[in-house]
Amino acid sequence: MIDDAVKRIDDAYTLRKLEEMVRINSVVRSEGEYAEYLKNELESLGLKTETQMVELGRPNVYARLKGDKPGKRLNFNGHTDTVPAVEGWETDPFTPTRRGDNLIGLGSCDMKAGFASVLTMVKAIQDSGHKLKGELSVSAVIDEEAYGEGAKAMLKTDFAKVNAIVLAEPYPCDETKPMPLGITGKILYEVTVKGKAAHGFRPQHGINAVEDAAKIVANLDKLTFLDHPDFHVGNYSTLKFEGGYQIYSVVVPASARFEVNRLLVPGETPATAVADMERLAKSLNLKSAVEVKIKPPQYEAYVMSKEDPIIKAFDPVYRDVMGKAPVYQYAYGITDANTFAGVGKIPCLHLGPARGVSDPKKGGGTHEKNEYVDVTWLPRVNKMYVKVADAFLNK
Image (cartoon, rainbow, N blue to C red):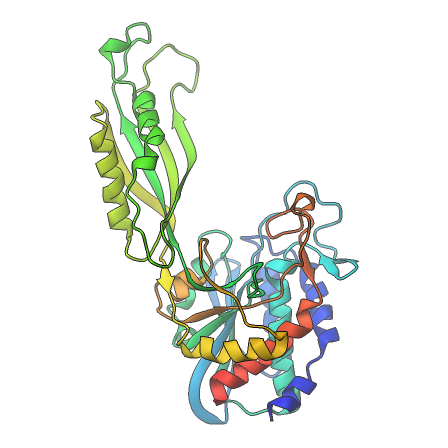
């Protein structure tokens, strides 16, 4: 009975594991020690683990628990990297610090609390002897905060041949951060503008690449955005602009470059986005030559249905545990689901412990100073993970 597994949930274990995880520095590109910690913990819970070395010292870790009967395959996933600590922390980012219901520490919310709940879910199932059909697996991947290389590498393994993935990201699935039924994709434009050098006192003899590049940037609002029925339209943001002298000289700049982030909705592709930027540049009748490329990172948009089995398993569980319906949305942003669902076509559920409602001026959010997780979320997520695993695999 699933109630036996629920009764064996050890919330004190969750908190203890979370504190141990925060003490491990796993800033992006330094995930090795944390990956080894997770590998050892999963093995201590009786799971068979595998390691995939994505880059030197940066492994993905996988573990699986085979059911006693054939059935579906469900994976619980998270990323092992955190962003670097920003300026302004009031505590040591790698020392878990309690202030009321908040546990402060780098990665506490994004997303070591989620991993602590995954371990707790596995422990409860193992301790109770609750039987699952099919296969329950866990994946811990690198690089989500950078280029997503860990998720890409996972798609090449047997652990991507699953029916659904639960991402233990900090999504409480309420009005503060709804469960995504889809997420935008993104590209990063790299636009190079080539003009002609000349003496700066006689600009008419040259072609000013900086001025022409500036004209494109000033007209980015004329890009054509597809209006999607769920997402509506994407957006753009200029992230970088370069051009002109390195050492002061009165020379008409012959080259300039800029980078623009663009979010894509389903129906838009990198090719259509490049064509759109080329169309805009051509419409301005510039004298410079303009080259439009895209550079990493790049992510695919995706859309899910409420009829997907993982959503149908999750929805009643959430209502039962939380006493209210989950909130859904079509989200702007990027997670590893853009790789798993956008490229791998694997339905993804985002669900994990999050921070509480706080004054945004004080920070504490993901990628901010004094990052924290509200520990009152841990028991609720623990219970939902156990019940979602049972509902998806056994029913």
